[in-house]
Length: 458
Ligand code: ZN
Image 1: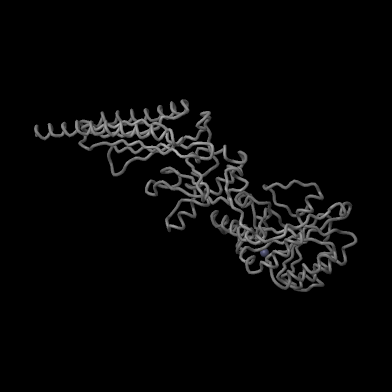
Image 2: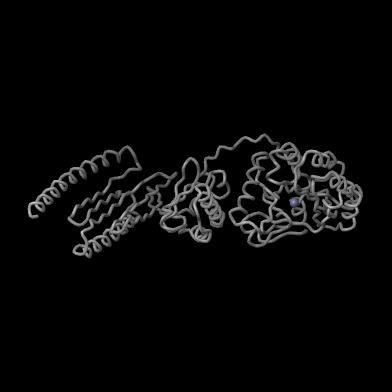
């Protein structure tokens, strides 16, 4: 027993010597490196091997004394907590405790990101892992957080939506169970939910701590939000997006002054694009100096991309009617987002722009859907019921009978009769009305749209 103990003490001494040599070597290495690499400052190492615990702490000496003080205080606090526990458990358990503190220091454009990782083992099955990140300007010491990279503070909401979306995607892609409420809470618009992040060439990586979006067994979760989703959310200088070349002509803006004083009608066409009906409509719009709005289905835009391109290049407005025309009231949040995101992606791929107007299928929208979609909600106030009648004359009469200034007319450009009915109505109404897109109408009426509202007319 006695000899065994002596042996252990000897070993500890040897370990101490080895550690001291290691410390000197690492420090020398760090100092040498310091001159060539601004990122890697000097380091502080602390290694202890006691009978009942081991402790290994590494942290950098930073150019910014303020940050360094903050880091040192944080680490010292964690170390003291650990030592107190070790002291308390000394005579109670033979388990050897362990504290390991490491760090990474990476460049983030003009800034540096210091990430402290703490693993403490004080019994039980696992280490307890904690981490904390600091973001700062190495020259001035100015500390920043993720808001520094946002276009403005309100963009945190959009980022929070994206984080929620990509975490659920992570769970679904890995066939894991998840708790929507938990995820919602862990990605809510509190900057404290976004304290660990990094910009990689693929986009913005966000790390979620243990328990933040799921139970302990899920571990830490990280997601990467692709750069192209961050346009308008993250300041441009922090994105290195290579624009995908989309061969589309930017439509010329119409001179709207010629319509001043005229009543306005917005013809809108859902459920397309299509080949025949959409093109028949496009062939005839110039006759009436008309431009219209298409609320297209994401699932169709690739197949009918020529119609979509043509419609857009002529100066018609392209909006979203979701991807698969589902009743959004019956979908979970993730699936709603998917319906909306996939449509915007599909449209962007073909015409290079993401629509900002949404017409929910069946007009089924509410506050919650408006919030998730983050688009302008546009419905209608003249329902031609074209899909039911499939009778051009009847559709025309319906439009003419209900036409009024600022009206939005619902039609579908998958039926030839609908297109014919619309053109007949234009023929009849052209002296009194101008036929404009939703965007042109709000411009002419001087309206600023609100994402919290649903519009039926203007
Ligand atoms: Zn529809």
